[in-house]
Length: 111
Figure: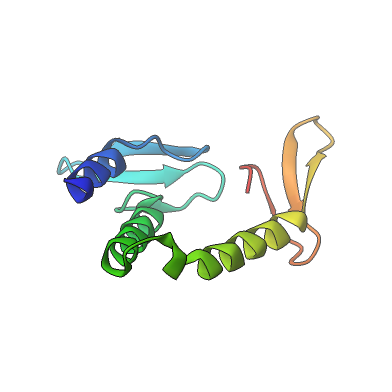
């Protein structure tokens, strides 16, 4: 089924840049972001996968994409606006990083 294949894809999905998979002393898998130092039990893309499944369920339930086109267009516009605030820069050692003009945040992984 569609949901089963999506779940398989999510389980086998590549990690976002800067993330690595590890096992603790009890054999449990966790994920670590080298850029932020954050460690989490769930795959870093888990929320996105769940959101995609919800969109698919909505499309099936409502008989097509027409029911969510406006929502998708709004999400795309928000993403474009948020990404426009980021600049690619280089530090004094020539290492690339990204800086957000609006929030004053900086990070090494590409937003």
